[in-house]
Length: 492
Ligand SMILES: Cc1cc2nc3c(=O)[nH]c(=O)nc-3n(C[C@H](O)[C@H](O)[C@H](O)COP(=O)(O)OP(=O)(O)OC[C@H]3O[C@@H](n4cnc5c(N)ncnc54)[C@H](O)[C@@H]3O)c2cc1C
Image (tube, rainbow, N blue to C red; front, side):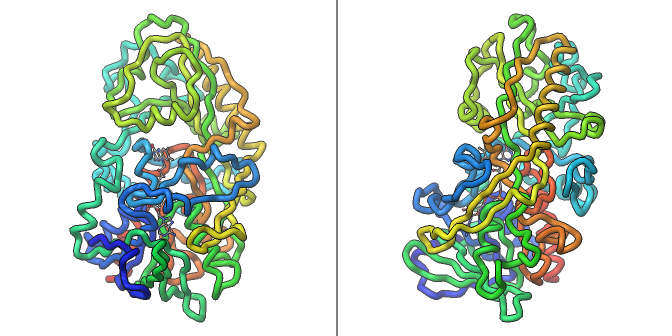
């Protein structure tokens, strides 16, 4: 059932086994899987069923540090389906290397290994309509072995990798899953209702209710055995920090860690690839199927040897020779598959990169004294990039350029990875409620439960203690399925 909060009687209380806040990739996956397993669920969504400026304006954020509007603009959506209303649908698992702590990257590593998530990656692939969890880049199997390769398979520092795209009919998770939500008797989905406060009991160890506000002036209450915040990395931290009426400095913030370790995958134009022969047969990567993408990443051996963080690079299809502005490049990526432009021959191709930031406690979300239209304190983002982050990105670019030159297909004209060009967000916000074994090292435990609260959980990429280089949403969905498993067994 989908209920418009604006017209509900003021003061009404909703009750269920689990209350989930936010209907994006994490919240929708969790709600529907919990309902499938027999739990009753309240799903509270701030926006309505379609984009509305009034709801989206609640995302307004103060920027500090190296944050720029380009880092954050257009990276979040406030309506049913959340940011999957404009994501690119590009999926890849984390590899086991990304779960390990890397001695050259402070604060890196996950509290569990790939084996803990692998069964849920399988379930996530089935859910999202991906034919398999991992596809190895194998030119023979792909039938493109006779084509020239931009980076040779024997290259020692770089390797080709394959990403899968979610099929068109499942990319926009709101429209895809709306009917399942509205027809499910186990789910009460309350839209146009923004959670403003999380109320703990007097001991501060258990949540007793959440308070929602509407633009029509109603205050609604939500009671459940367990509560899960799935509002994105900035808003999850904001809600915990803003709920400070009983516990000073906010919920789960005993060690001053809520909001810290904010990470993204900053995006840059690495430079232009100058093809040796623009009329030569296209390289093997251009022959892959529409729902697959190929890119390049540094090998674990190269990362150990050069002390590097993660890195991925993509060459945009053959296009006119002008430099492709970043915004246009992103639009190209997120376009529905059928509308993507046919490649045209050109001597210059743009190369775009995303790189991993180290988990840095000084990169953080705090609260501004300013209030939004519903009286909730706005978030302030101090995004910090370290000199080591930049040096790692720069070295990775060099390794990529050398690998391309060695393959003999072309040469890369490198742009400088420094200054304002780095502050383009990848739209992959992570890390603000990181998981850890010990409460002093993170906000949440291995199940996403806030360490200091018995029944408050967090979902989404704010749980990631290390960002890796892979796109986050496939892992967000896998984590949500894992959390559904855990929460339903807890109720049983
Ligand atoms: C341009 C772009 C392209 C992208 N492409 C890819 C890609 O190809 N592959 C990939 O893996 N990732 C991609 N991403 C990232 C992806 O969109 C996110 O990782 C994913 O949507 C996060 O899911 P989530 O459920 O955690 O948060 P969201 O999807 O942001 O959902 C959060 C939900 O919470 C609601 N909410 C917020 N605050 C409140 C509140 N107080 N009360 C009630 N509800 C609230 C919001 O309205 C929203 O519905 C892309 C992002 C951008 C910006």
